[in-house]
Image 1 (tube, rainbow, N blue to C red):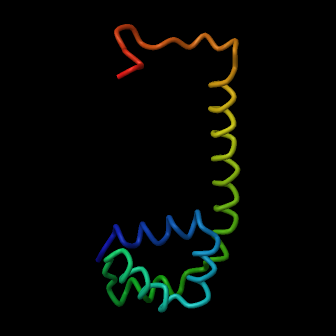
Image 2 (tube, rainbow, N blue to C red):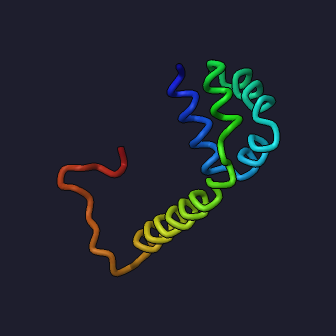
Length: 97
């Protein structure tokens, strides 16, 4: 069993709507594509599990992830450009290196 392959497929499906839709439409074709492109091997049981997945259930997860990631990006970008930020490099660090 290839845990790494399954994690890849589920993670990619959760974050990539086009991938998720292709996986839902033709899971066997996508498993073949993933195997060829990324050199992952799937057992027959894994293929069967992927084919039986409720990929529509990931839509809500994907939306929640997207919202959370967007908020994190906004928080980071605004704190980096905030002129009142009192952030200082760690002592002894050299930002030029």
